[in-house]
Length: 91
Image (cartoon, rainbow, N blue to C red; front, side, top):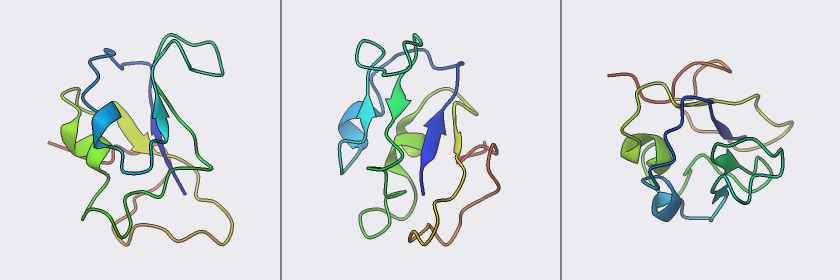
C-alpha cells in the first residue's frame, strides 16, 4: 500500500511534516535520483489508523500531484483507496 508523488511536485515541503510514519523524503534523498519528493512504499501506510485520508495529499497544494500507487500484496489499505494512478485528493 502506498501513495506516489508525481513529477508535477513543486518541492514545497507541505507533505514532509504531515507523514505520520516519515515515509516521504525530499528530492535530495530520492533514491531514484529524480528531482521530486519520494514516498517509500514499504513505509507508507496510507494514513490508516492515523488520519481519515492520506495527510500528505490533503496538505499538497498541487492538484493531482499525489496519486495512489499499486497496492501491496496482503497490505492493509485505505477503505477509500482509488485505482493506481488516480489522484488521492481531487478538487
